[in-house]
Image (tube, rainbow, N blue to C red; front, top):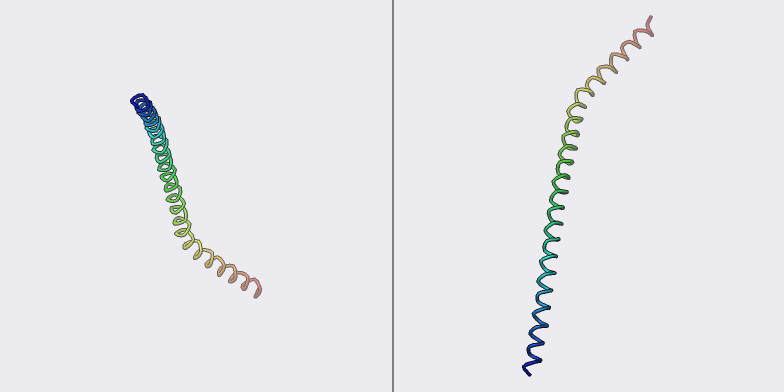
Amino acid sequence: MSTSFDILVIALGVLLGIFLLLSIIALVFVLRFIATLRRIAAKGELVIDSAEAAAEMFKKASGPLGVLRTVSSILETVNQHKHRKD
Protein backbone atom coordinates (compact mmCIF):
# COMPACT_ATOMS: atom_id res chain seq x y z
CA MET A 1 0.00 0.00 0.00
CA SER A 2 2.81 2.36 0.78
CA THR A 3 4.31 1.99 -2.70
CA SER A 4 1.07 2.84 -4.49
CA PHE A 5 0.55 5.79 -2.16
CA ASP A 6 4.07 7.08 -2.92
CA ILE A 7 3.48 6.69 -6.67
CA LEU A 8 0.17 8.55 -6.39
CA VAL A 9 1.76 11.38 -4.39
CA ILE A 10 4.60 11.69 -6.91
CA ALA A 11 2.18 11.65 -9.89
CA LEU A 12 -0.07 14.26 -8.30
CA GLY A 13 2.95 16.40 -7.40
CA VAL A 14 4.23 16.27 -10.96
CA LEU A 15 0.78 17.09 -12.36
CA LEU A 16 0.39 19.96 -9.91
CA GLY A 17 3.81 21.31 -10.91
CA ILE A 18 2.93 21.09 -14.61
CA PHE A 19 -0.41 22.79 -13.97
CA LEU A 20 1.29 25.54 -11.97
CA LEU A 21 3.87 26.10 -14.71
CA LEU A 22 1.20 26.23 -17.44
CA SER A 23 -0.89 28.62 -15.34
CA ILE A 24 2.05 30.99 -14.91
CA ILE A 25 2.78 30.91 -18.65
CA ALA A 26 -0.89 31.53 -19.47
CA LEU A 27 -0.99 34.41 -16.99
CA VAL A 28 2.05 36.03 -18.62
CA PHE A 29 0.44 35.77 -22.07
CA VAL A 30 -2.84 37.19 -20.78
CA LEU A 31 -1.04 40.14 -19.18
CA ARG A 32 0.87 40.83 -22.41
CA PHE A 33 -2.38 40.66 -24.38
CA ILE A 34 -4.05 43.11 -21.98
CA ALA A 35 -1.09 45.50 -22.32
CA THR A 36 -1.38 45.28 -26.12
CA LEU A 37 -5.11 46.00 -25.93
CA ARG A 38 -4.44 49.04 -23.76
CA ARG A 39 -1.92 50.39 -26.29
CA ILE A 40 -4.39 49.83 -29.12
CA ALA A 41 -7.14 51.58 -27.16
CA ALA A 42 -4.86 54.54 -26.43
CA LYS A 43 -3.96 54.87 -30.12
CA GLY A 44 -7.64 54.60 -31.03
CA GLU A 45 -8.46 57.41 -28.62
CA LEU A 46 -5.77 59.59 -30.22
CA VAL A 47 -7.20 58.91 -33.67
CA ILE A 48 -10.71 59.75 -32.49
CA ASP A 49 -9.50 62.94 -30.79
CA SER A 50 -7.69 64.09 -33.94
CA ALA A 51 -10.74 63.26 -36.07
CA GLU A 52 -12.94 65.23 -33.69
CA ALA A 53 -10.53 68.16 -33.81
CA ALA A 54 -10.52 68.08 -37.61
CA ALA A 55 -14.31 67.91 -37.73
CA GLU A 56 -14.56 70.82 -35.30
CA MET A 57 -12.13 72.84 -37.43
CA PHE A 58 -14.18 72.17 -40.57
CA LYS A 59 -17.36 73.04 -38.70
CA LYS A 60 -15.91 76.35 -37.56
CA ALA A 61 -14.52 77.10 -41.00
CA SER A 62 -17.75 76.24 -42.77
CA GLY A 63 -19.60 79.10 -41.01
CA PRO A 64 -17.45 81.92 -42.43
CA LEU A 65 -17.13 80.13 -45.75
CA GLY A 66 -20.89 79.77 -45.94
CA VAL A 67 -21.34 83.48 -45.35
CA LEU A 68 -18.64 84.24 -47.91
CA ARG A 69 -20.34 82.01 -50.47
CA THR A 70 -23.69 83.71 -49.84
CA VAL A 71 -22.17 87.17 -50.23
CA SER A 72 -20.36 86.02 -53.38
CA SER A 73 -23.58 84.64 -54.80
CA ILE A 74 -25.40 87.91 -54.09
CA LEU A 75 -22.63 89.93 -55.75
CA GLU A 76 -22.69 87.68 -58.82
CA THR A 77 -26.45 88.08 -59.09
CA VAL A 78 -26.17 91.88 -58.80
CA ASN A 79 -23.41 91.94 -61.46
CA GLN A 80 -25.46 89.79 -63.80
CA HIS A 81 -28.49 92.03 -63.27
CA LYS A 82 -26.40 95.15 -64.05
CA HIS A 83 -25.06 93.60 -67.26
CA ARG A 84 -28.59 92.83 -68.42
CA LYS A 85 -29.63 96.46 -68.03
CA ASP A 86 -26.66 97.71 -70.07
